[in-house]
Image 1: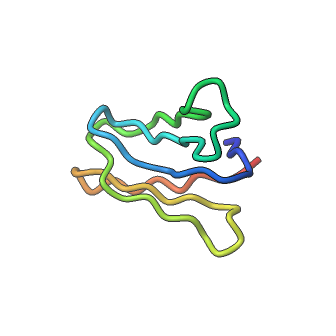
Image 2: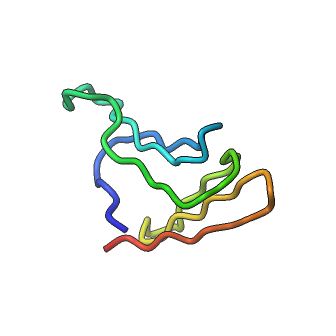
Image 3: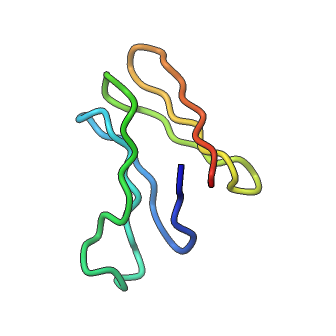
Length: 69
């Protein structure tokens, strides 16, 4: 999975997606990346210390580990 480096907020959503939002205002669109893989609303997101992994969790209890490529 490709993660954008830079100043972003990563958030889970009720539509079962994970969104990367540009908070520097340099992107034409605030959503710069969207991860899909959950079937339930996403409640938790957390990066590893070196930002090589992103863990996301949803209301059903599913946890997905995304690896930066």
